[in-house]
Length: 474
Image 1 (cartoon, helix red, strand yellow):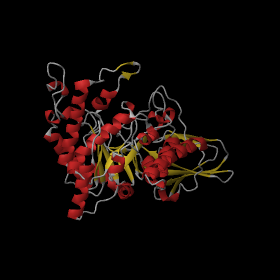
Image 2 (image 1 turned 180 degrees about the horizontal axis):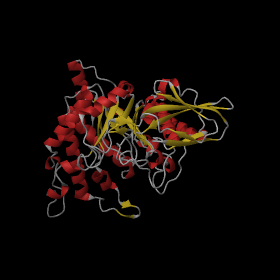
Image 3 (image 1 turned 45 degrees about the vertical axis):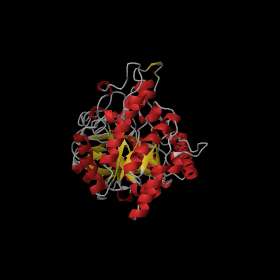
Image 4 (image 1 turned 90 degrees about the vertical axis):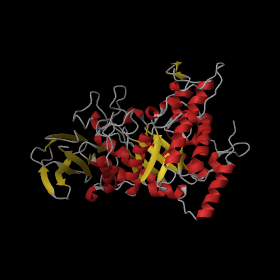
């Protein structure tokens, strides 16, 4: 089915002309968004609070205080919207007789989303409403799952009902937030490409844009493609139709997005089936360079800016910041985890992308912000922000010739390097030397140090300087 979008876009052009609105273009918005973070596992849980503490306004104070510019807010609507099974959408012959009007999103839930997004945008952050946890919808397009028939797969009237329910959700969002600041963005679907092919995603993107553009004619909207995941997803977006009836060409307020968790053997290495704990070789980085350049080339060719919506790696050693225990199957070596975040973040910024790193809080396996005590995993946070503590990282070699474990540490930390050591010194966050160790040691006694952030500076015999951040008693 074709969807004519000309009348909608004519209306928003007329709106801008008559009202003298100066709306940020997608390229301007991506530049404004810069470096950001996800509020993961909060509003995307079945019920807020199930997977992480309910969000409080102080979260956004902490985010903006350290320098992030954008918060992507993954949200799940399923448990707060009229259920499909409660609606009579078929006649006796099985024909579809339903409509969007059969489904209502709870007003109280929209109130909560408005409260949270207002906290963000009122503090000067860019906020993204990301319809994230509604797998019931994209799973309805997946016929088989792990080789078996998928019970959530829908056809005929059932499929039409699912589409109308999803459209009803976006109608409610569009109407509720139509008068909000341009710093509030919409993201139509999260990772639908695992269940939907390219044409199916394009079709839904078109239908949702028809809805949102009625009340939000110039709001920047984030879209992704179907059929292939990771960096290849936006490359699947249809860039031309025979009659040029294509939302990518007709809608001037679109931003494309992608996620990146490759190689899974490293980023998911806290799980039993993955055990690549190191990352950062020239070959590792060359793969990133190649894949990200493909995204950049697509972005340039189609004049659609890019938002890097998710990336991350498991916590060091599979560490759980809530229980203060290490995982049963290991996990990324800390320097590798930090470098993975730093390299991807900086690569995105260098290519002109904005980003939001994935963070699911201190009860989850990928942690940056610890909501329970309002602190950060400092070295990862700094890596994302492109910050070097007192400039001490500037001489750190790119090769991973040094490892330290555990980090965060309490009383003792073990380290190893493949080259002879000349001196070992420890500095506090003010740059003051607090300890000096013998060069033949393979562990550090930290028992008498106050909790905080420290920099371990090792001068090798070949004059190479290694600087590593250590968190003590966190």
